[in-house]
Image 1 (cartoon, protein in one colour):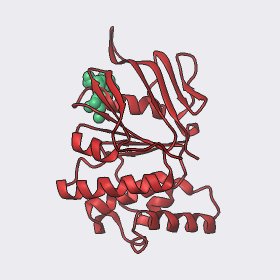
Image 2: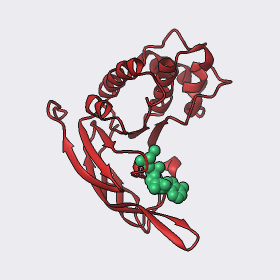
Image 3: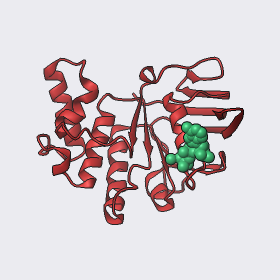
Length: 232
Ligand code: ADP
Ligand code: MG
């Protein structure tokens, strides 16, 4: 089941020798359950840092990160990444080249009994429109198909929240446009709460219900897009 995400006054710093660099400061937002949020901003503004903190790979110096009413991060609390129910689709998390599409999707389901796992993999491949492609290896798939397999892999363990870090940036612009719409439809059909980050404004507008603009580690605006409606 999807849940809301909230960040309350989050600060994240990187230590480098005697220097400490504040990458994110006074960062607050609320993303309601089932909605798609987007953080929009130029390279280096802190987008990946925020996602890494939500996923549990960076500690917070002040403030709090909550999933539903569960406190994930604060200066005194840090739930480990594998216990957060947070899924990730990051550009750099490419598919495993030696595993076929079905094996990639099943990767996070290794603890399920074989038949249950096979059924879930088939369901996920169908969700992203690749039910016929399970036996194909990544190099036999187009860039757009690879990203859809990566999405199926991220959704398979049923995360409460999905994070997407510039997931379409390596694709040509027509594939990117098509995939943006497809991914939005898939996430909406699944009722998935998701947070996307990108430097591409049209991608942000096409994909998200809520868009925030990030500047120098701060959230300048966090607003609901016109034309989107709250879930029932
Ligand atoms: P974006 O994803 O928006 O491009 P990042 O979150 O990657 O931005 O980086 C935000 C800032 O934090 C940048 O100034 C970057 O140089 C710095 N930074 C990112 N990762 C590290 C790290 N591991 N150590 C030190 N500084 C970092
Ligand atoms: Mg980044």
